[in-house]
Length: 235
Image (cartoon, rainbow, N blue to C red):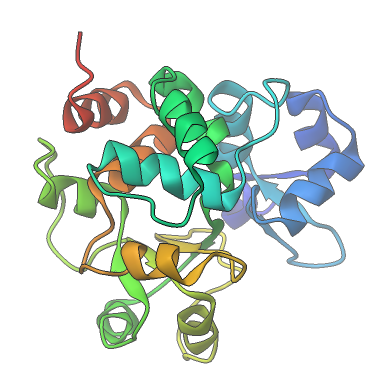
């Protein structure tokens, strides 16, 4: 395999690591749950994403929450009110919010579709000018008080509305099929109630709970500790 593709594996290899069928891997690629590229006729899956899904997002642990319910949970843990859910759904959301943080990557996977791209500095600056964009990930976590040391420069993780994502797709200079992505883009579903979208993009950064969820998706001990501290769930 070429040097630039050594961090990418075949669909069959990904299926073996996840103990699922190749078709299931293709479904995860189509849904955005696994990052993939097509440098030729073959589809290659990002090895790191497969490892994270195998070790953090347990494939056999049940289905993720619906996008609306996932955002209700994130709203509650951020001390916000999820006005879009019914009374019975609110009870369920509170119950989910008390689940162990180890379950969050699976439970909240449906909150947005994930894209990993290569984005130069000028393009990152242009992202700030778009409506329907909020900073996520470690940058948002640090702004919410997480004890994280980050490099100088523009944020490397964003949440966008579908309309803002369409504007991003039209930008030049973004490597959508890059073998070395350096930016994560979360696109919220267009089926979300307007109240959810208004809350998610009300500030420059996503909520404290959403930033913590992004940290937990990384799967490493440092990020898990930072997420727990951010949520006040440290033992």
